[in-house]
Structures are given as structure tokens and as C-alpha cells.
Length: 352
View 1 (cartoon, rainbow, N blue to C red):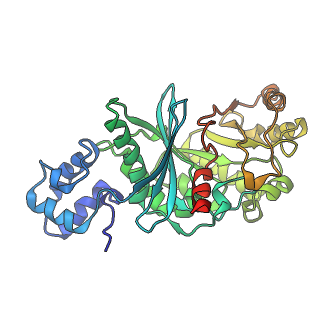
View 2 (cartoon, rainbow, N blue to C red):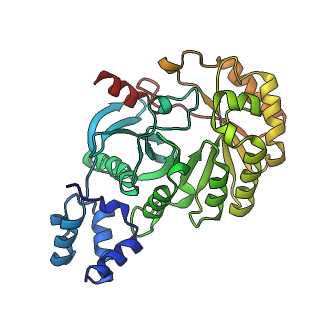
View 3 (cartoon, rainbow, N blue to C red):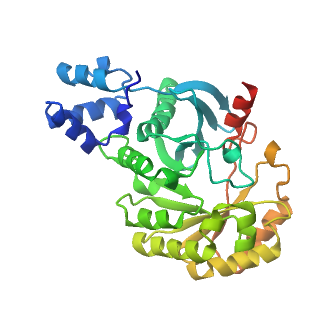
């Protein structure tokens, strides 16, 4: 019988668990230090943890539950991990190198039910949510990979943008963030953590009201309801008239900027009229939002979509700029490997 991952416990949860099992809550600090600073992978190696406590933890929890199935390494330093869960399901985790540090993109669900028509992640429907421990372990897997390489490098940024809709797994996602930003553990700063959503308006409001205080990115991808509904089914449930007020609520409550993700699809949403319409939509939020243009990574199963030309990308960017909109073009990573999110997983499952 599989035991749950100890990575799923926040420090406060661990203190409460120890107390409930007849242990001193103060021993949680030594366990936490062993897990996240010494990065031990066995309870037997927790030298500074009371032996009785270590034995109890060994009986009740696992440390490592994910197995490396496949790993792809790009010439630009990007590494995509295909990880196998204890139930045999596969998920993706990606390490990306930036000038500002090392970023890890984590997955929150096995498959995805949002059904964006251009996305590889939704090719396989959601079978279950990941636990907070399974999400934390993705970060730890990458950190252990870096440790083994002897580079003395540290994961410094997290993006919750892998397979699945994070807000559809809200509680486990929230616990994950509390674990990774704890200053006694991985100590990843809140401003270095970004959660992406396809647009679950009520959850955006709940996120704004939470004590997480991390960044938000919205997968917008279209400037009007008709087009957004055509490429993103979620817009039927939460059209722009409901979504954008939720965004405004987040902006007011958090006092932070938001990133509006916009994937460019040739001839679909990348023309000048689309850029002007997007500028009008974003305009009232021009001082609190940044549009991030994303060149499309083609997916075999979505052959109706093609990558926008460099001229179209430049033209779209320039049009937004002229309208006073803050805009950037995402720097691509791993273009020589299965770059699209969910692509490696989908290929591996089909090959089985």
C-alpha cells in the first residue's frame, strides 16, 4: 500500500500531525530542514531528527513517489521530464533557464478537461487531480537533478502552467504554494511564483482573497467572445463580461500586475483588427496588465492551426505598442524537443 508524500504537508500541517501522533511539534523544524535544505531522500538519513520521529514518519509517509520515465534535454538548457506517478499515470515537468534564474513549470492534473482547441495538454482528458505532495515533488525532482549535476544551482522561480487547470485543483495547488514559499524550506519568493488559469472567474476571485500573494497569468488568447468561445470552450461558462470583472477584482485586491497570455494562431487571431480589439479590451487596465504574445508550437492533432509568421507577430506587437499597451513576446524554450505542453506525454502514451 502506497503511503502519501510527506511533501504534501505544510510546516503547520506537519507540526499538527506530529502533535496528534504523540510527538513534539518542535521536531517539525528539523524534519523540514532535512527535506528542503539538506534534501534527503530517505527518512534514514535525517541525522538531526529524533529517531522515534523518523521511524514514525517512515511508517506513515513516502519522500519520493515519482519515477523518471523519460527526459529530454534541449541545446538551450531546457529539460523536460516525463514522470510516472505511483498509479502509472504520466505527467510533465519542465526546467527552463533564464537570465534571471532557473524556472520550473509544474503540472497540477493528469490530463485536462478545459478543452482548448489548440492545446496538447487537453488531448487526453483529466483522470484525476495531483496531490499537493505530487506537485511539490516535481520541484524537488528538478532540484535533485541540479544537485546531482554538481552545479550548485537553485530553482528560483515557479510557473504553474503545466498540464491541467490549476484552479480546478485549487486546494492542492494552494498547499503546494504554501510549501514552496515557506522561508524555512525552499524559500521561493511569492513574486517569483506565477499561477496560470484559463479563466475560471469565481476561482480568480477566490485566489484574490487568499493569502497566497503570488502572481496571476490569464490565458486570454482572443479579444472577443465569439472567437474565444471558438478556440476555448471555457468561455461558454465564463465569457469576457464575467471574466474581466474578476480580473479587475484581482488587480484591486492584490495590487499586482497581471499577465494576459495570447497565443498567436496564423489567420485566426493574429491580424491587425484582432490587435486593435485586444488593445480596446486591455486599455482600461493598461497600467496593471502586460500582454505576453506566445508563438504557437504546432501539434499534430491540431493541424487546423499554424504558427504565425514573424511579420504577423511583429505587426501584432507594434499595433499593441502604438495603442499604449504593455506587451512582450515570450522567449521560446526547448524548440528542438517536444516544446508544446503535454506533447511529450501524449506521444509516449500513444506509443505504449
